[in-house]
Length: 275
Image (cartoon, rainbow, N blue to C red; front, side, top):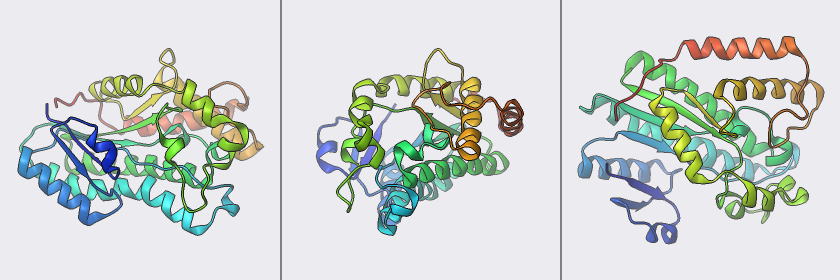
């Protein structure tokens, strides 16, 4: 297996040892298309396309400057579109029988965590999830040999929080105010655990790969996330970094959301891509 890693941080890339490490701004279509050309010229095809971009910054929805909204949306959401526009058409034409596209949303993409992660990041991750759903349906119709998977992890111990500083010079307001930053960095999921769950999810043909608690099933996590989303929107509830506390007991709403999810899930292929 050949591994290509692209990042805007040249210093971080210099510390890696993979088959190809390329500096690339994921928001720049010209740079991403050039990367796609380089990958196909050197390796011939792509087995798994993994789009994983994001920054976290801003404040409440009405207190976040437009420049910050645009920056967060560009890196956290639109970069996924740029990546897929560059690579997916090439993947459709390649000779490989099976391939997969993985887009990284978040637990914030399944429920409203704006009180903790800021409005812009939460909106961007929800947009990424919906884009992944749209891409899955489109490819199911036109190129069923390419599966799509939406990774939705809970807090992960990565440099995201430390590096998410924009023109405002600060991170997401709630992370600073409530001290969640240090807690997440110390107690968040390990990247290796998320990667292991992702590989298993792709092999099992799952669309949603939700990683919060390894002992909790995918379906129950999603159903609970939907139930909590109803509580946040309708009752002003707070979303904790976990499940159970703060959730509404509105069984009818939970059942409705679960039925909607199940209906969508039935429309996606249950397949095991051979990569």
